[in-house]
Length: 369
Ligand code: ADP
Ligand code: MG
Ligand code: MG
Image 1 (cartoon, rainbow, N blue to C red):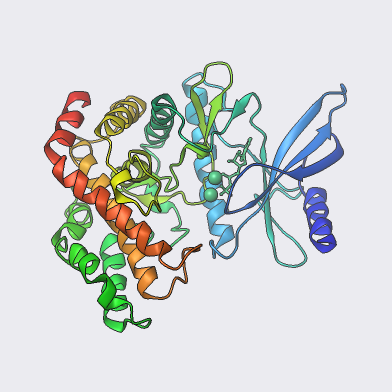
Image 2: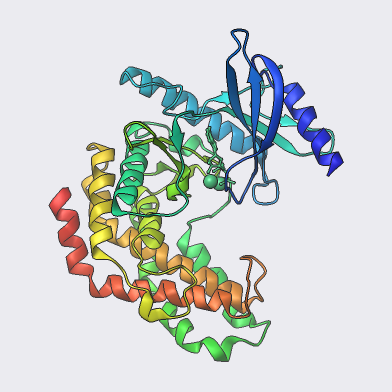
């Protein structure tokens, strides 16, 4: 603990903060990085805050590549926001570099640190409390697509390789079924069959990409409400944060993952499936907000594939929970024996609901396109 504190202070000493150091404390409800707020007093007596994060080196094997992504994307965003007469100090993350001009600092025990300007007068909500919150996150993530639509996505590092490569996830799943190292296969034959019946579907987005009809985009890959800063004055989403998983990908997967966890009436691990339903109403709200945010920058084909993205992310996620269950729960943290199986079942319930609502989903998309 003392050791850790001295590493924080080591990092603070290396980053080019302005003013006189006052103190720091843990901050926020993130689960991936260790986040701190650091206070500095300015010459005029006012206080300035910064975010300091120890990056999660277990999840992200290439912190330098990850920071190259964030640096490239935030510099680009800054220019775009200024061209649109926005406030680039609040509408994008701004990296605070080290004293020797680097975008991260590696401390003496090998931890990686980075800092951002603190976005003041705005908050993050952990839970969707109202459809309005969900709509605000949709416009923010749509606007993120809009601003980055001409960014060269292929130059980005894959911070988690094959993150949404559904065919590759499907291969892993089939290997886990075959190996059955925990002897759990017999118990989940119904779930395995559910996946296998959707075999051909798994390839649809990757095939569209390979034949050139689905563009590679800058994707966020963690499109949760608490990764959007909501402005205290306007109540609108002003800035998308948490850019660790920014990677080349498909816009419909960002859209789809938001639907997966946001347009469900139940928790991701709800054991009572009667409480887990796909909400067409929430799908409608998110579609509206996302398309408004994108301001015409998506192709017809991408918009057409919104329902496919939603189903793909939900099926892929359920399949990953099932894979982990078969492999003995080594990836997702569990709090009860069948936790991953419960999670898998909620996802498959949502997939079934989406299939039943397929035409209605298409009608919603057509309404806003
Ligand atoms: P994690 O990957 O652990 O979720 P985040 O980058 O999302 O880490 O940061 C955790 C929390 O810290 C956010 O949910 C938000 O409340 C706060 N935060 C992060 N960056 C900023 C910032 N630039 N300004 C204000 N708050 C921030
Ligand atoms: Mg976060
Ligand atoms: Mg994160």
